[in-house]
Length: 83
Image 1 (cartoon, one colour):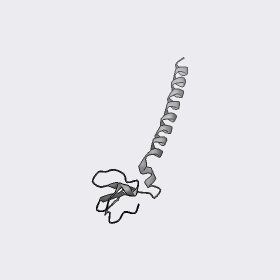
Image 2 (cartoon, one colour):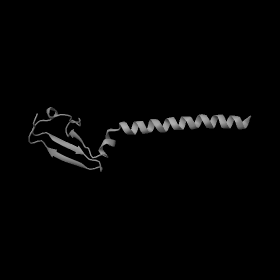
Image 3 (cartoon, one colour):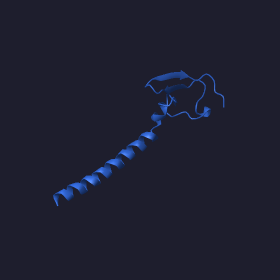
């Protein structure tokens, strides 16, 4: 009986472990920073911290910060906006 109990709980534990691993992988895939590893960058308004998605999100003179894959950043000032 004890052996059956151990086998049953081991099976349940194994299933839960697989489910947890799948959820971890899914969460990692949704992480915006995982995109950086493929060569993309994330650019934010330096003052507000908001992600810049289009030209209308910035104005001439705004400071912006670009986050790169290798944990580096580039700080820039907007000199021209083309919408």
